[in-house]
Length: 48
Image (cartoon, rainbow, N blue to C red):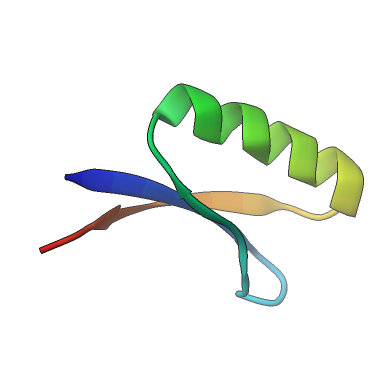
């Protein structure tokens, strides 16, 4: 099952733990970008 992780683009550190849906990931991305003032990217991670 795939999960989404938010990562700070400048530092490469993980900002938020795994998120279940793309919709929630987009909302969290917007919130973190306004709070941090930096770009945050969404990465899709697959667990084995």
